[in-house]
Image 1 (cartoon, rainbow, N blue to C red):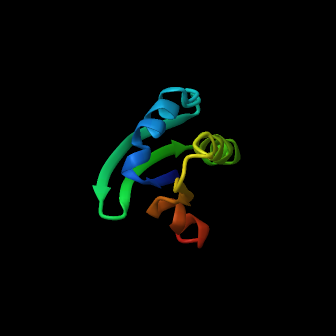
Image 2 (image 1 turned 180 degrees about the vertical axis):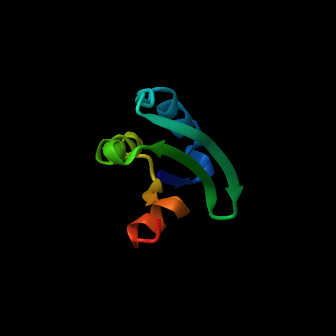
Image 3 (image 1 turned 90 degrees about the horizontal axis):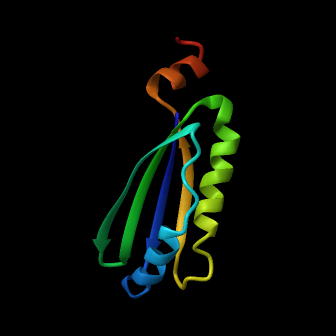
Length: 98
């Protein structure tokens, strides 16, 4: 399964975002980070991160990702989401089809 994290911020806060990003704690060994990826849009800059994590470490993974984004609190107009996504195989297992 993966945790998909998205962020959004205004271009004028990019330097503040960058400075805090460089101070983030490393990703724990039990997770694999794919990204981050960034794109510019009319409503601001958007970022995407995908964290691969085993189900047994899901709670720890969500705690890490949430704390990672809390590091950006105080920067005006910073927004984030962190959502769990299951693979198709995991979803089939959940409904008794695998």
